[in-house]
Structure formats: structure tokens, C-alpha cells
Length: 209
Image (cartoon, rainbow, N blue to C red; front, side, top):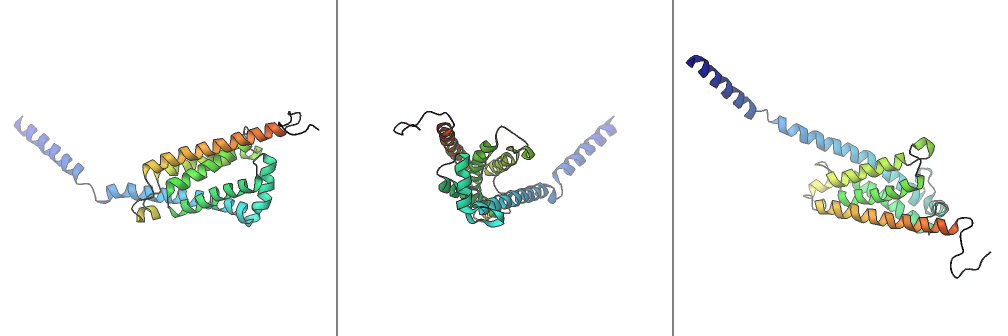
């Protein structure tokens, strides 16, 4: 009986030592993989946003530039078209570039998420991209909002700067502000579309016909 108790105690001690003496890389590996995953996500999403914003601002990659994008925005109800195109282009290109670098990630993610919120509304209610739906814009918006909340990870300029520009309160304030701004833009668009719809009553002060 005593021998069995001694053996059991030795087994428990060995198990305890094994649990506390894990290899040094056991805890480091998940952190490295997390940083790598966030970097891949930032690089992919940031590059796509940067390319789309460059289309709107500079006409690169077959885009219409400010003039062409502004005209298209006017047709979609975003007025005035030129400033709307610049704002959307900056939200995409600026947010994408900062996200790619991992700099001011909460602000960059929030700006891009707000821009994608407005873009999703243009394609609503259809969902799938092949049907002209909001699937693609929504995916970018969710991804950028998630990055604004999680931060850029260790492989970033934010990390090199000691996360001075990556504070939790910046994530919350940035996402709330971008949602409010996007909602205001969409409300203005809805009012414009309602006022210019066929059969809509004339705006006060404007002659009929």
C-alpha cells in the first residue's frame, strides 16, 4: 500500500514538472503565428483598398479618376460627385496604405470600414457579387473593422512605435465616428434620390416643370 502511494506521488510530481517545463517556443509560437496571420490579412486587404482608392483618385488600374468617379457618384446619388469621389478615394487608398504599413491601424481600419459601409448600400439588397450585390464590399468592411479592433500585430510600424497610435479607445471612437459619418452620407443620398425620383414633388422654391 505504502509503495503504491509513493509511486503515485512520484507520478504526480513528474507530471507537474512536465507541465511547468514546456519548451521555450511553446508560448512564443502562437504569438508568431498570430502576428503572421495579421500581417497577411493587412497586406491583402490593404493592397486591395489601395488599388481601388488609386482608381478613384488618380485613374490608375483602369479607374475613372476623380472626374469619372465623380460623375458615376452623381448618378448613384452621392452629391456633389467630385468631393464624394475624393472622400471615398482617400478612405480606401489612405486607409489601405496605413493598414498595409500597420500604422494608426484603428483609424485606418475605421476609415476603410465606413467607406465600405457606404459602398455596400449602393449594391443593397442583392448579396452575391455576380448579381451586383454587396458581398465584396461587405467582406472588406468586416475585415477592416476587425483589424481596427484587433490591432496590426507585432509586424507593424505601430509595434515599432510602441503602439502609441494603436489604443483601444481609438478603435471604439474611430468605428463609431465612421459609422455615424457613413450613415449621414447615406441619409443625404436617400434624400437626394427621393427628391429627384420621377413624380417627386418639386423642392420648395423651385418652379414646377
